[in-house]
Amino acid sequence: ENHLSTTIRFVCCESQQEVKELIQDPYIMASLLNNVESPIMNLDTENCQQEVLNDEEDGDEKDETERGGTEIPQISDQVSTIDSTHEESSPPPTNEITTKEINQLKEEGEEQYESNELESSKKDENIVIEDTDDDNQRAKRRRKAPSIYKDNDMNTEQLRLLQQAVENSRVENLNVEVHIPEAPVFHPTIEEFVDPIKYIAKIKSQAIQFGICRIIPPEGWKYPTQIDTKSTKKFATKLQRMNLMQEGRAMGDGSFYTLNEYEKMANNFKDEWAKRHHDGSVTDEQLEADYWKLIKNYSAESPSVEYGNDLSTHEYNSGFFQRLPTDPPLGASTAPFGSEEYYRTCGWNLNNISAWPGSSIGCITHPIDGINKPWVYHGMLFASFCWHREDIYLASINYLHEGSSKQWYGIPGNKAKSFKNVLEKQLKLRIKEVPDLEHHITTQISPSILLQSNVPVFKTKQNHGEFIITFPEAYHAGFSYGFNSAEAVNFATSDWIKHGSQSVVDYRLKAKKEVFSFDRLLFTLTYHLDEYNIGSCE
Image (cartoon, rainbow, N blue to C red; front, side, top):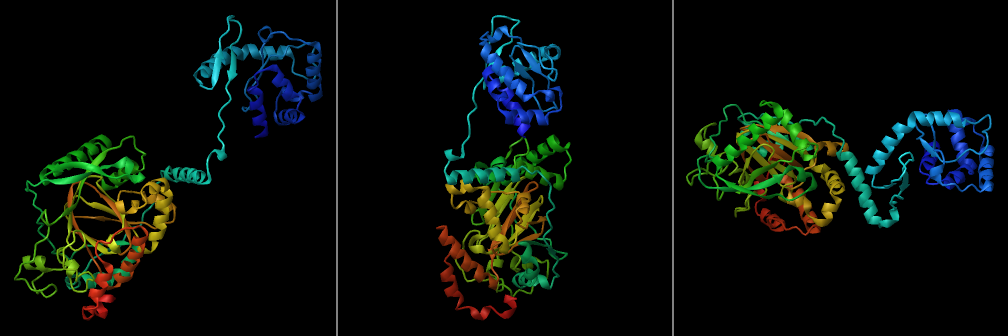
């Protein structure tokens, strides 16, 4: 490093005087003479210094253009060519490289040196070229002093943010494929399937450590979706700019579609993507890789997609049957599995599960969209639901009515703090602008970044006719592999109370309002304690 630095100082000399000053410095000469393997190693420091003194005594003030330019050859692939303007006034010592040898080397490389150096220097904004009248004379270069970055130009906070940005960039640009473990999949029997709250409470000890799980209904489950594909009623979409999602940028407003129009648009987008990038045939694994490349800006493309999310079943049809006034109370039906009455009254009907016996939010009688009244979602290829937790840290259930699969990612609720730490590091400046960014649900962070930061991430692919369960405080995210229609709602097992209590504390710190009063819910539950037996708490 010392040798290279010294060599650069010689190359950047603008005048003979600067060369003289460097030669008079014994440390610099020792650095060159002791580290470079070439004839110049035979140079004697004292002779060089004496030669400079003799030259100064002679008072030789000839113009540099009258002096013959000489070059020292490139040495050990580290030393650049050096222009010497010193004119020999006496025969060189026997232990020096001779002027003849220097001139011979100069003649061999001068033409290539001039053409390369002058061309590159004209393109360099930090170098000014002064043309000369004599074609035989070499153009002189005058280098502008580069601007120097100083840490003290920034305050402590700015410097800390800069350092964090550099670290984030280093992590984000590690475009490595990482193995993401699979979340568990459960296959309940028809008997276990009778009571969803009890069954979910039963598997919770196994599944909660993954944050999410997938439930495949028993054989014979063929729920006839009630999504009206022929409806002429239009719904709004959100425009998602994929290259901005990792920055936590808000979604824009998309177009309005009927469901039939949206399906055609979504299918055309997927077909075009497959043709341009995969010769028409593409697997879900390839699409998953494409998705994260787009999110992390590793692709030259920056497509936008439209997502029909959070559509109220008050305005748009639920995909599940509505109960009839003549139907028995929830949990009391004895209709055979697979019958229309069964589909209408069972707990896996998302219109029923929030109020199912044993659900801690069952005593909320007024409908709240997304909480005890399902939301409908229409997706397309790459349409995303970004990292978030459910309101008041409730559990949720999602059912895919029809169409292409959905890819899900989950983080256990007990690792929520670790996720938030990564989020704050990755988007520190953005969070300063929007302190409640987490609740905007607009940020998509790659699982590879989370895993590199020791945040456990698990994944599962939801297919048509399957349920996804997210547990309290579990962050989850994902995207669609093509056009699909899904439905989701919240519910709560008895042990959710402690998570709900924590949500109240966290919300108050962020000045976020609760979607319903947790304190009022607790007061109401005291009148229904007899409904929560030991079985529903296990």
